[in-house]
Length: 545
Image (cartoon, rainbow, N blue to C red; front, top):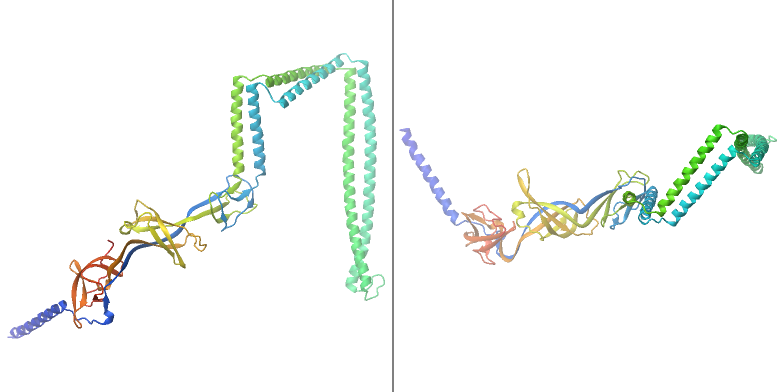
């Protein structure tokens, strides 16, 4: 009985739910919307632009870090950070004097090697070389004649030779005695001068001591040190001060005189020792020559004969050198000398390159970004960095859906958040043909070049780039908020009487995310509901054409 009572109640509830659903469905086709002025928009005609954007850091066209290729001490830094430089301008240099000497020496060696090669191939030496070789032959012949004469004198000494040797001994003895006497006198005088200077120093020290004592007394007691009365007058005080200054000056002069006298004495003493030793050696040599003439030993004769043979060999060598100058060389000599010329030329070029590398020069027009060296330090490790800002560029990564709308040569708008009043136009100069995949995200890098002379724009700043992917002019436009989905199409609502609307099917085109192009379904000036209430607004259904 209770179950039957509950069934009518269930049936009534079902009927009410069904009736309510039918009512709501009927209301969906003719919405009751408050068509206030603020909720109504007008179909307009205008221009539509779509963009892709990105950001990245500003990069210089070129950045180079320059360092010395030659080792030395930095003696010139001609630029500072921020300075503009021209290609070839000297930025810094090391002390190149040693390198200049090396270049001069290497050039002399190279010139000499070439001259010798010319001499070998032509058989005629330069006049200076020929003169030198002839002089060597003459000198060697004279030395041989002297050696032969000495040998003959040892074997058969003449009366004149013996007399000359005896006279030489006498002259050497006289010279020795004269040297001893004169040097001894000079030393004695220097010693006396030193003693006088020392005595003058003692007197100066005494006078200075008195003057210093008097002045110290005045500063302690303000009385006259001679009488003990006071206070001492300014004139007397100045007199004592002058006495102290004069005594101190005399003391310094006396000290300098003692030092000078000591140096003079030491020099004369050393000179006496050297001069006497030289005179004694001359006497010993004269006695030896006389003894050799009077009683030559077998060793003396053997040494004289050896000297003759050596002089003969020297003469032959000098003649051979002269012959080489006036006679063309053999093919082997020429080949060897050609190799010597090549080696000398290589050494010369290497030293010139080292000298060139003693200066750092700008490889291009640019701006000095960093100076990492100081004058006086070793060139090793020091660098100067230069950047080229003409042009600058940014490398921006775009997704694969955006990159297809970007072309080389396309213009781009640039801005910098840190410089709100700065804008510039750039150009797409390259697009990477290979994707960069990071964390599953595929992107392609595009390079945008731009030229700008604003000193506020610094390398490394973050720049924002915007590229126009599509533009349409004079098209019908409605706000994205007015568009509703309907199946696979789109609709908008238009006012239809008081507080009612009706749906109109439309075909949409391009959208910039705020407004959408209408291809069919609406006319310019037509009123539409900007924010429909019966469906969730769906903006931006269009896209790039």
